[in-house]
Structure formats: structure tokens, C-alpha cells
Length: 187
Ligand code: GRF
Image 1 (cartoon, rainbow, N blue to C red):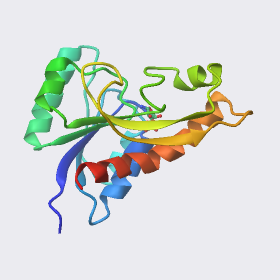
Image 2 (cartoon, rainbow, N blue to C red):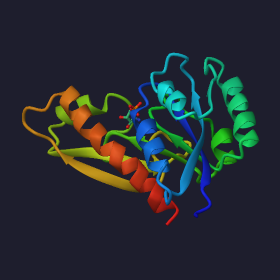
Image 3 (cartoon, helix red, strand yellow):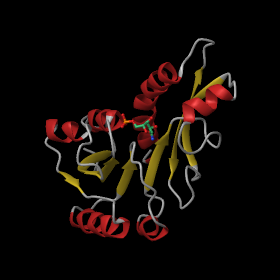
Image 4 (spheres, rainbow, N blue to C red):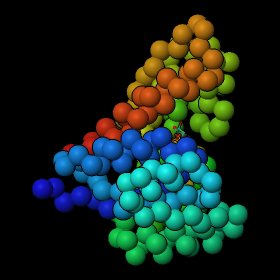
């Protein structure tokens, strides 16, 4: 039996990536176990997955960012969390917070980084008439979507793709890529 890494997933919204990570983590040889879910949005749909699988979850408002990070750090320490997976988490973590989990915070972004960092990714990709887009799992550093890349997956863009169709297509890939990247980290 592998010793699994205690992991926390940070979310703000739908949590479909959270769901895919939880599902993978239930496989006996998956390297991490989800011990905690943190949301900065009390209405985040994704909380339903924590409930479904009986995973402890916390809501901390991020209106006061330093208080948010302090609350997270206390809980993360208490639960001996070693890896943080950001999955649709819509806040930028401070340098100080990141330094406490150096090389142990990862994120998924819906573009082929370093292209199209930040928000409105699909719109930018379509406006730029890209042939391919995709998704990227990367380490989090103090610059937005700029940390070392762990894994990317390319998706072909069709002529009639819209922002929504592209988003759905890429999201489907994300659900495979995130668990794959976590496996790779602990190989
Ligand atoms: C995903 O597209 C992810 O790449 C981006 O935010 C979205 C989150 O989706 N960072 P979900 O909440 O996991 O469904």
C-alpha cells in the first residue's frame, strides 16, 4: 500500500476538477489522498463533491485576503497537508503563503501555457485564431500562471468552435490531465 500524500484542493466554483481528482484518489495506487477542500465562495457548487465523498471542507471568505490565508494555514497545518491543488480557485495567493508550501502548490489552467495567461482564455484564443489550444498543469509561483510546467494537453480547435464549446472540450481534457500530472509528480 502506497503512503499517500495529504492533499487539499482549493476551489471557488463548479469543482469539476475537484471531482476528477477525488475520483482518481480513490484508486489504491493514486499517490495522494484528499483530506480537505477549501472554498473562498460559500456558494461554490463544488462543495457538493466534498459532501458526497465525506471529505472535510471549509469556507473562508477571501474579502480580507491575509485573514483568509491565515485561516487556511492553520487548517492546513492541523491536517498535515503537504500538497495544495488549485482547481478553479479564483484568487492569487501571496508570496508569503506560497513560500510556506514551496513547490507544493499546483494549478490547472485552460490554455497551453505560457500562452494566454489569466482570465478570458477562450475568448483570447479564438480572437487570436489559434489552431490548437489545451490545458496545462503547473507549479504555482508568485506570478500569475507562470510557474514551472508539469504537463500540457493539446486540443484541436474547430472552425465552428465557440467559447462555450471550447471550454467544454478543454474541461474534458483537464479532468484527465490533472490526475495524470499528480501521478507524474510522485512517480
Ligand atoms: C477550469 O477551466 C480550470 O482550468 C480553471 O478554472 C476552471 C475550473 O473549473 N482554472 P472547475 O471548477 O474545476 O469545474
